[in-house]
Length: 230
Image (cartoon, rainbow, N blue to C red; front, side, top):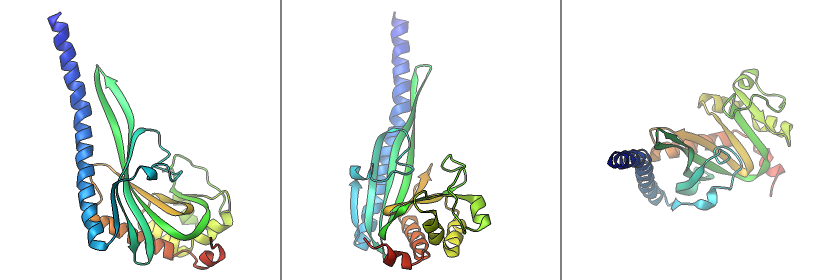
């Protein structure tokens, strides 16, 4: 009987170790990012919030459509930079729980999300590196460079012609140059994400990415904004 009790205690200890340590790591990483971004926001006159549950369901694109629980949006900064309005934050969710020989462990994914707020509303559009979104098909969008089409699939069921107008040669070059996995336009927001594995995006990298996305938006035809005012 004592042996069984000891086995139960050992299994319980292993389970606590495998579930507790990852959570402590994730919490510490949240705290570190929040501190860095709060300082960045203060230095630039931007808004900062340590968490923002209202952002968890605002966009219907990856990574928000992934299966999982314990969803958290944290480290939120927003403001104006070089003529664009943006929001940046981290999105975290638990994607898998497993039990092996009585030991419980879990997988968590963390993404940094950048949102550029556009001057007007556009039809929903997704530009995705082939295979990145788990789909090989694509809407027929005329006028795209063949080399770009080999790398990226473009989805714009509402208005494929507008997608072709949006993806100017300069836009396609920027997307390929920066090896982007892709982005989505939903309403008046351009949403870009990058997965964090073992590292985090520093404040300088956050700003650099905002500037890269600003350049991308600047490469879109400016007449579209006048044609499609709110």
